[in-house]
Image 1: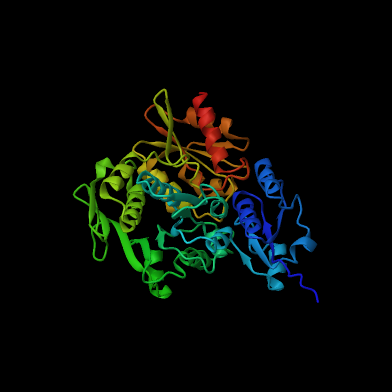
Image 2: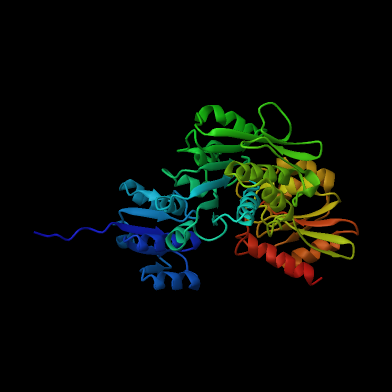
Length: 451
């Protein structure tokens, strides 16, 4: 009689931060683990996989090694309609995200944040409050280290997790103790067949599996969220916030204070003490404050952390003032709504740098602000045809740059006059000319500082 038992085989597709971390957790838990990446794997992830003796391949997907998986953990960067994913689905192989997998192996409290805009700032701010208050907390998801790797190698009581729609797409049983939904505006339409409802449904997956013991924090004035609330029959306790006091809202600004009316005790703080300025950051601060107050963090700890937070790189980041021209790095603005917030917060005339890999953008949302605030435009992309078609009728001075950031910064500086702001807020992904939005922002800062 054969007593050899079959070890469950887990294949991880994609060996970036989330994939490598998922592979380590799978290996630690005793699974037969294999990692496959169609691109080159970074050396630090190869070293990590080798340290755990996890077999891997790069530059290809060997189907014979993948289609035999009992379960597949997919990188959020891989499209759901990729041929290999379609084959796996057709044969009934479960496909999950790294976050879904990691959630099986920890009892930590999960504070999860999503939204089209503001999620990195809000996630970082919540983590900062929790960490400053002395809680044992990990930062994960789109920022920080892989949740799976932390679950495999560390032990936290709380995780603050930024979740993209792509991650939420492949989450099924994962449960958020506190779910934060900041807003929903069109983004990644190229990944959702230009169907807004599919994108909306992905965002609302953050509330799945929540119970009456959990909290759902959301922006009360978002028309899409308000419409969808009735459809989804949410079980969690609702905690809506808004810029001003209105019926049903539990957190708002009034008389130059922010007010958070959550149990156990209401919290208030002078608005001018907040580290982050602007209406969009008011929302981020309110969402973070609610999360911290519900967790029972002391008021003085919340107040201190909200006032000394340093902000997020590449998000309305001041770079320098050169001969009276201010340069602001908002490279993280990879959709139109993010650019709207950036323009809305500008106090001077603006030379706007935008362009890159278009994700099905509709620029109508920023049209009025561009007319009101912009003195010139710099188009930064391999193909700027769509930008010209939309913005050229405005008759603003325009520079066309197809080559890279140095030329774009030089062009913006030439177009700007003393007292104006050069704002890099691209509305687009960065993959045509740069590795990612961080690379784009870092190059912007490098060439601004070289002026």
